[in-house]
Length: 138
Image (cartoon, rainbow, N blue to C red; front, side, top):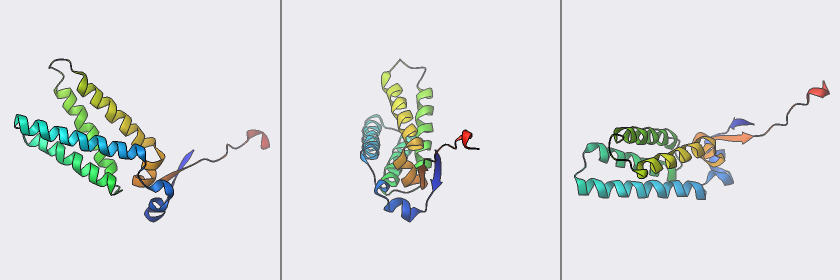
């Protein structure tokens, strides 16, 4: 299996060049997460770091829906921010919510790296399967 590069027009015109159910679920997850962060930031008087993370999530949602290649590095940046915020909260009481948040982000990043639709839409490459060369044919 190899990845074959295609141009933007061909990638977005392909039937798999639109957002599927999994990508819409990712969008809904980030919208809900941004809304939750905004509620908590308003209630707790959040600082600029919380609002910057909310802005990052909303920018990520916009680039995902608009099928822009910038969504891929924003997704990686969001994952790094989540890991850093998890490590910063490690000294507090044990809580399963941040751990579940990391697990969801790891699953999303795995899908973004290996999924057919995300690679076609955001990285303009398509998976091609070539037959294995038969060693006995020589």
